Length: 316
Image (cartoon, rainbow, N blue to C red):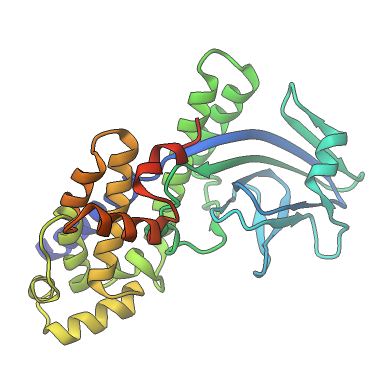
């Protein structure tokens, strides 16, 4: 029993460490009242969520299979690759830009569209990940995350956050933009936590947490990311031989242990640079690089821009 508690705590610690670095920029929250038949197509761009208040909808990420969302369900599309949402297979689909131009009430933040058939009402929202694309987090996520309602209806946390989001969006009081961003932040993190708790076959850091001994090594890396870890020292924490640990870690997480650690260190360094807490030279030293130049090369290869440009990558 003690061992199970310890593993649960380790999982929560790693999950908290990863989710701590998620910062979102809420762009729009709205309600959609849709009468069958209807269909909307969203182009690639910001991430999106749909909460089905009444009715149902089929949601299909670009290049993936459709998912049926019923009343009380939440759909999160974290990658922003574009998607379609329709009332039933075969319904006509129109671009959201065209429909919004004709049928979106910008004052009330309400979209009305469709025919005279069965009604579906959604709460939707756009958001983006600020600054770093957080590949350590994003690589572990599928194109669509489905949080179904329980036997008692929508989870209380989901219903409460949705109500607060709409209230802030519609009233437009001082500070509403900040409140919307914070509420979307809470919604997404709570969704990721609920989803992660139900997954069995998963990759990335989530996959590692599913294996007790690999989870111990992940917990150690996240507890002290700038320690001079070696594969051997991590294998000892996992109580495995070096070769078996390296093989099992790569299979569970999707990359070798020291490569994962390097990417996680760079993600932390980007966050520290963004917040103004570190200079580039200090970040290079903390992440274990022998020179600023070597750190800058690794950083740019990972994120696509130089460490000196981090703060410019954060939307104002």
